[in-house]
Image (cartoon, rainbow, N blue to C red; front, top):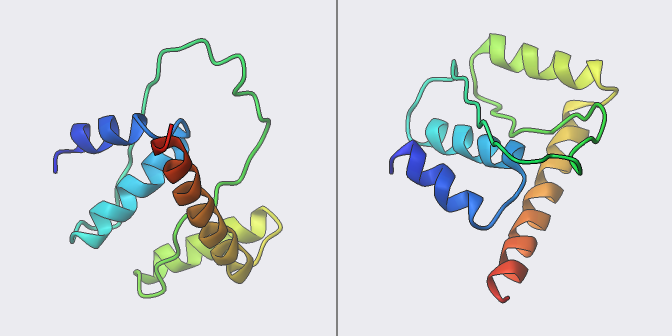
Length: 108
């Protein structure tokens, strides 16, 4: 699947571009990509309802990632007052909610 198609398909069912990027990176890693990636979605719209202040978005934790990834992940969690275990739980809860939301939206 091409990256454009992946993002375009997800934008049809999910308005959270941060979640889409997280899912993109996860998919790329699962398909053998290396862990040194950057992705940005530039979405041109009003955005008046997006101001959420500072937010920490929990990403997937790859326990068997390279040591610098594992250390950076742990450090990022600690900077935001979380443990790795808390972030793993938050990520899991977010994924379950996202699936529920997508299922609900597809029924409309």
